[in-house]
Figure 1 (cartoon, one colour):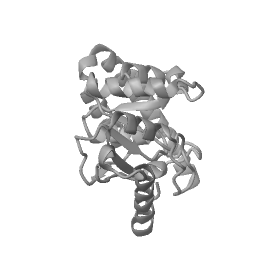
Figure 2 (figure 1 turned 45 degrees about the vertical axis):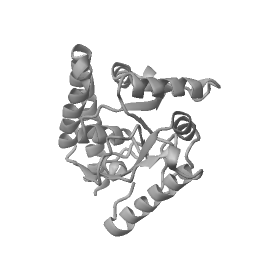
Figure 3 (figure 1 turned 120 degrees about the horizontal axis):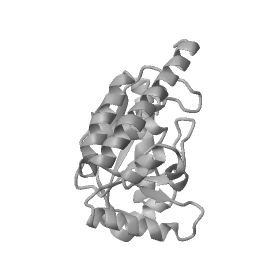
Length: 237
């Protein structure tokens, strides 16, 4: 796509996300908190439509999973996933995001989980937050185990946090591979191109019944799907 056109499309995408989040999503979630899951689902579907994109599901969402593990490229990952399903996930996000205008307010209203990477007690807080989310709120949790966005096709080494939480709480994990989101909105290059966002839902992993290398195996499986998507469908992560 022409560079100028991709830049214009990027700023249109940013404008759409800002307007929907600031003037519709936050006020509606604030007023109708009991219905925040369906509100997020409907409005994120509108965002995807206005971006000229679709969230495409490959495989089945396993509703028996306690935690969903995703690779991460940007805010579109969350927008597209929320547009795909109504099972309002409790996303884990670094605490700095909770202090941002609009996005931070939305994270707080959605009761998302804050991660403090500098605190030595952060893993204890996460354990309590995840346990409370699953047992009391009846909400599944979602995490990006890479910890940050990567620039290439190669997954970054998974951080240990998700592994510790899953093993301590005996969770069931479903890995999910996202492709196409960076092409749709590339926040680092500030470009946007026409692209659907594809979610490949991999088989459920019951941590309690799995081998000691289950976490490493998940990363290998996810990398294989990323490589296959690029090789056979020319779709990058």
